[in-house]
Image (cartoon, rainbow, N blue to C red):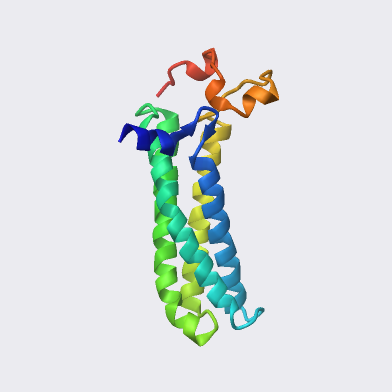
Length: 180
């Protein structure tokens, strides 16, 4: 079990969660664009099929993405600003995935008809909005709170690409306890 958690965390300086989110968010975004293009009638009949396929791949990628993010979440000190941000991020992303699942179910009949209808398209758009809010909060964790970031600007490139070999010295402002 400990080895599985280690794999889900990734390496020092190279956590697994961010590249998985890139793939998942990108896939959902492509699906949303295709579904909306079909609904608006600015695409060919098969576009809704491509959109539904992209949403299905996004849903498949959601499992490992959420698992890797949850492993990172468990290491965040409870009650801190970082933890509160991570909690809302997690809720937004899981909600988005749930709404994408509902959208995919609504789009099943549209797949056969060759064109998206309002219910599936609007549900997909709502899921994308939730995904955008969740992604914004995820960016806050990294770029404001410094979550899973090693700040080693002087590290030689040959060592930086092998993050497990980096021995990090504590950085006072990043390692200090957070205020509530």
